Amino acid sequence: MFSAALFCQILLATAAFAIPSSKDSLAARIARRNAGLTHQSHPNQLVESPFPAEVTEVDAATNGTTAKVSYSGNWAGAVLSAKNATYKTVTGTFVVPHPKEPSGATGRHSAAAWVGIDGASCGKAILQTGLDITVNGSDVNYYAWYEWFPAPWTDFTGITFKAGDTVIVSVTATSKTSGKATVTNKSTGKSVSHTFTGQPDLCEEDAEWIVEDFSSGGKLVPFADFGKVEFTDATVTTLAGKTVGPAGATLVDLVHNKTVLTKASTGARSVTVSYVG
Image (tube, rainbow, N blue to C red; front, top):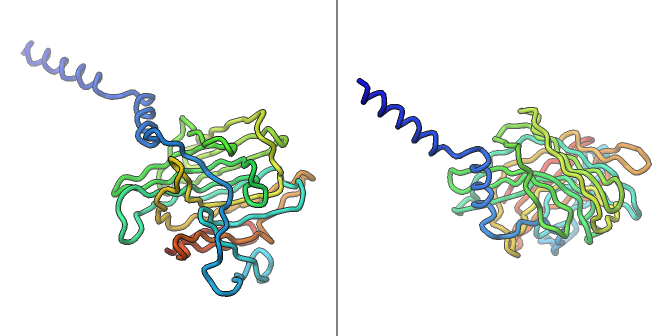
């Protein structure tokens, strides 16, 4: 009886030592994710339209008028642009999607859903934050991150996600060289933020709600079938203190090898990006 009890205690102690701490688990996940490569968003890489004539879409945000559609090698979503410094805060809320590998493809595929300031008409700096969405077979992972381009992004720690969670993402430019990025998992009540100082100058001329094919190791990652990302409560606060929605935004659809992979649309306070490839 004593031997059996002792044996059980030894088993329990061994199991306890075998269970990694949450810190070790996070470090292991980040190490597997990064694999020694740099993960980075980039300015909008415009490409030639795959269609013979300019395309417009009905824009619900402007009472049924048409919105211009542009095409990109790495972005999909909506961009508001001004001719001078205008935008201070960009916010959006979305439900975490469950991605899958594109039809006929296998292996690791990713996308990043984010909000940001600059990177479209002003490509020298971008203040942004969002969620990395990755699928590899049955393995699905999500990572929150922040970035002030041209530096690569940095993962937030202490926050996790699962498909179906509601996420709020927000960036604020407190000056052209400083700002704040915040990601909140509304479903769990957890929020994380990062404050930037001494960064490359923003233009404060672009406001964006984007799903991106980001870069790793200097090249675009295989793009995931993310399903749909709908940014609700999509708003911009201007430097003058006015809050507006995405009315008048240019829609951006992502194109690979002359194939359009996404479809973007806007509402009065929403930007929807769907995978159609």
